[in-house]
Amino acid sequence: MAVLSGVIRVMEKAARKAGGRLRRDFGEVEHLQVSRKGPADFVSKADQIAERTIYDELLSARPDWGFVMEEAGIIEGDESKPRWIVDPLDGTSNFLHGIPHFAISIAVQEPKLGGGGWGDVTAGVIYNPITDETFWAEKSRGAWLHDGRLRVSARRNLPEALIATGIPFQGHGDFGEWTKIFGAIGPQVAGVRRFGAASLDLAWLAAGRFDGFWESGLNDWDTAAGCLIVREAGGFVSDFRGRSQPIHSAQVLAGNDALHSKLHKLLVGALKA
Image (cartoon, rainbow, N blue to C red; front, side, top):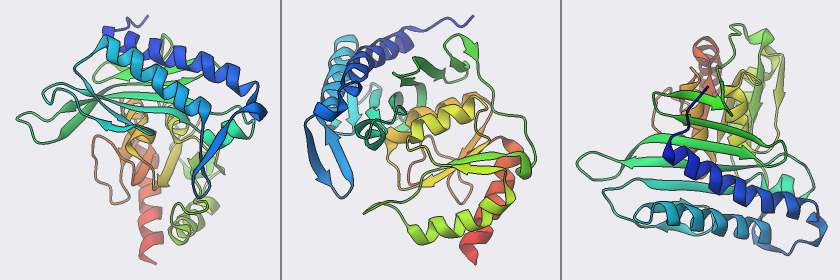
């Protein structure tokens, strides 16, 4: 059985507190006050309350840590201390349309040794309020679903693989790039799924429910926890060139070792064409 560290306990408590409110609001989704933030990019009152709830909980536990948050942006803390990366509601469009597939994502990023920027992500939690599933990981301690160890799938062949992706939408993403990649990968695999919450796509990849994942045009708060969870589950995460960074958002390609390599080959070929 996994023993939760202090920081994971803090993250899970914050996620569960915000998640309880999201569950209640989801049951009354038609009554939510919704404001337009940009083309096809909506922010709800529930989203804002969830972020404030998480912020208050994390600030109380670690008052000198900074924040990177979807709504509030960057809030500086002690530059020698870690910072929180928070997405209070990944899958906002699903939430607002009554689709029960969304999550809270919280990650811890360490400052680079010697100063001058940010380095490794060392802890991550992804919580699904509807299924009450908590996916979590700490660097070098593995990835877990509650107290069960996670491992990426062992499938080695593309015709057996189920791949997740995110599709560009109004005002977001590169349709031409995505179409080329889909045209190369789609015919080679068992299926491609688009569920609308990148954090859960990565968590499900770590759990072996998906075998691979690609998407571009995301933000750090969408993927910071998920990248760590996949890696700690034995998977590989890179950008489209195959380079590995602590967080991938602009370009994400993930899978086990064999499928990551095969997907990368198809992707690179598609973008060169």
